Image (tube, rainbow, N blue to C red; front, side):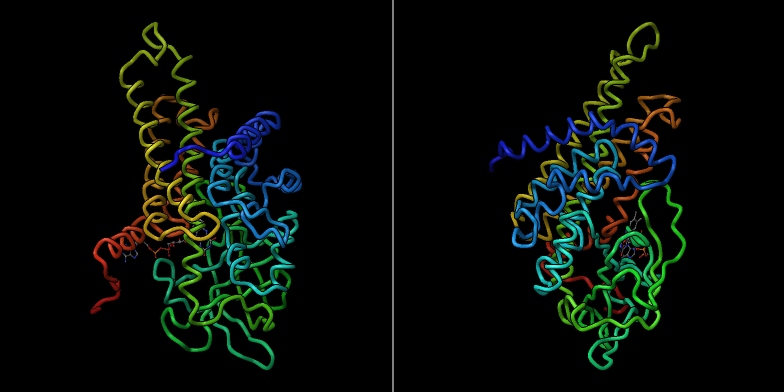
Length: 388
Ligand SMILES: Cc1cc2nc3c(=O)[nH]c(=O)nc-3n(C[C@H](O)[C@H](O)[C@H](O)COP(=O)(O)OP(=O)(O)OC[C@H]3O[C@@H](n4cnc5c(N)ncnc54)[C@H](O)[C@@H]3O)c2cc1C
């Protein structure tokens, strides 16, 4: 196993770090958390630095880079805040990958190209009021009508909701029940019958648009179908890439919190000594480094295994599950190093504690990831429905 990053990858990480310092991302992260306004000015800047669509197809404006390169960029930016990393996440490991892998030439020309330029963005729309973990029970549905379809339903907790230009909507085709009936269509902002609920008021990730999507007799032209009923497996396989990105966010947030705690421990004094001289503080920082590095190895392994394609379900689930729990643990411990200031907005660690909690739910709960891991380990499926 080769643990070395390429020279290009090392340079990318260094460039991002320097850019974040030059552009004062630390202050920008606090401002975004305080105002709840997403930093849209990052889009043209990232497009100019080729950070958008790094993993997408070169023939449509991407750079065909491996998943690991995007993971490294997401991790480095998320050290400042997940908001700084969000455009890189969405454009490299988000649902645009489904379009890039399975979409038609027309869809790719329009959407992938626009995403790479920072002009378009795509949200993934799976969760419904009665279908979260139990995704295969989703009720949103398209019915054939003339030369297209008519879409009805409601999605909740959609990241990017209200702001994204395109929505990859997981939907049932007709009345085929279970996963066999599920495919995906693209819904464009502004289509008649497509409206948004109010923006969510979330604990963390403040500044990230998120809301319900409401579809009332939305006409979907045939050319907006990305995957048909029967292709659910491909949708979920592509989602494993997003899970690596989710885990990379955890690496970044934990890395940022650890660095804040380490720096504070060097300068804060108690009992006439810097607190880094107390064993509890030393062991906290050492434990943070240990857990962060263990998670990093799992995430890099999953992303490296994916190459330019898809990761193994087992490796991606393991990495996400471990990183999701690690980041909660590390940020909690980092806050304790700050004493009273760990509970104050005067330092970024308070925000990091809140931001850390999102990842174990978004992209699949850690409980559901464990059922996936168990399936692989036992070599059989465990249907979660009663009587099965
Ligand atoms: C910050 C954030 C961003 C999100 N972004 C998006 C997005 O962009 N697009 C999107 O579609 N969704 C998004 N979601 C929604 C997310 O995917 C769901 O919240 C998640 O899948 C869980 O679904 P639920 O909330 O309905 O929980 P439920 O399914 O109601 O589960 C409730 C609890 O029961 C547990 N549980 C359920 N079934 C089982 C089981 N069989 N075994 C063990 N435990 C079980 C769950 O783990 C959880 O703890 C986002 C959520 C958050 C918090």
